[in-house]
Image (tube, rainbow, N blue to C red; front, side, top):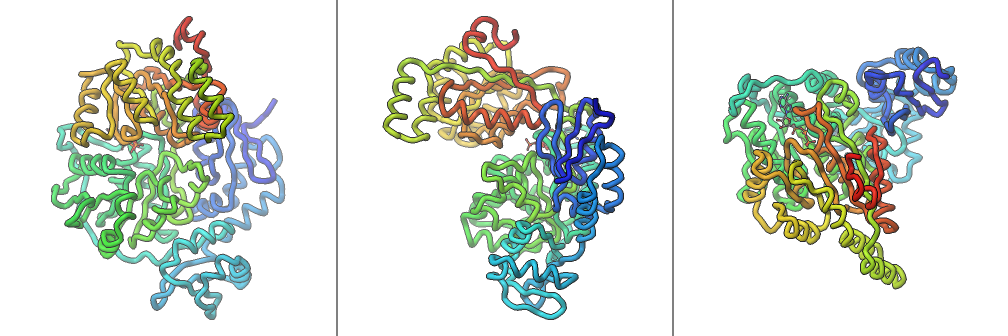
Length: 557
Ligand SMILES: Nc1ncnc2c1ncn2[C@@H]1O[C@H](COP(=O)(O)OP(=O)(O)OP(=O)(O)O)[C@@H](O)[C@H]1O
């Protein structure tokens, strides 16, 4: 029997027995100075890392507070080594700064030892232009992002004092939105915005806010824009997200529409609020440079898990006084999500799904995996492809198109339930759309047509819809069931974003179903194991059915 809720290991791993934290308050507090590793039901895992402790110091925590909190709630005695580490790392804060000096990037350390550590890293010393006096190293300005990433890898973090531009902009929330609704921010949204506003200046203007899908990250971003009152560049995942940001700004802020520009095609126009997307802005050098020549007060990186991609990382170079990263999760299949901290700044706020649930803003979601055998024909094809080394791409395709999935769909598609079907493969989506006469959102139609179909669904004129990758961007309301029929390999991010479609605020008393149909004994099954594990780690519960169970009683049994 444990007398207290935490077990704190000497290496900084913290286990929280969540039956002893029923309202999730301890878990939420731990996000202030640890990284969340996983939160399956029962025991959550957090980790004290150098960066999480450094970020806590930047927020104003002192080592004694962290140590005292851990001692109060830990079942076991805190190891001396860990106490020393907490003290050491938190005292490191402010030891390293980045400044601009005569067009060079100056990295200034408080003592010689840090300089020695830095120069012992071969990749960093390759970038070095010269060594100055007073523990200063000079680099090219254009190497700033790479340097920050390399420092992060050796657990060193510099306060970035190079961000010094920015124009002002008068922008305020409307009390009644243009669509005629009273609008106020929820408490947790205010807390998130305040956390960024109170802390970002201490590290030179950057920082990250992590909140579950549909919890209102856009509103948090807008609150920050309103408080800073500065020109803002918003970089989103795609065109539809950009459009959604624009609609939210037009609806909720007192800015005229001509002060907001969607930066997508020539001739390029820059407005005090300009919205673009990662893919577009990194595909056109001229457009990038033009946008970068404007003096931004704030750059918002929406869906920032995209940023560490090799092709997108240069967007972190946009000159701006403040930088804000918004994300539902930093998980990436290449494990580079944490690079967001290196290039944008510390995590100032993280809202756990459990906290959102406790606050009454999150619908309960039941996850179900339905395992379906391959049809005889597909099995033959699968074995043949395996034997002839046709590759995982082919095997995944056969598993995705398994004809037996239809047997599961026959049970699962209920005309009285509002159902979304998600498919990675377009042709599979089209096939299901034809067979079941379900509206389909694909890239054959233009954006306006797609938006019309989404609106029909949201107005309850139709109650089922099938979407491919394109649908990820749309907002759907009041969904009873989301059925996944095919997958982008083991992408845990795709899984979380699909689940996010069910996370609703208005109907939180109801239970939504998240159902994934998987072909057994295939690479799809092993891919899905990783996707399932990541959702379990977020605290979601799974039931597993086989086709026979399903045909006997459906997923409600
Ligand atoms: N305080 C609020 N009052 C009323 N509606 C709100 C509030 N905050 C958010 N919403 C609404 O909730 C929905 C989801 O908000 P938003 O798109 O900002 O969430 P998100 O976290 O950015 O979602 P995603 O992760 O899908 O991008 C939107 O329709 C938004 O208008």
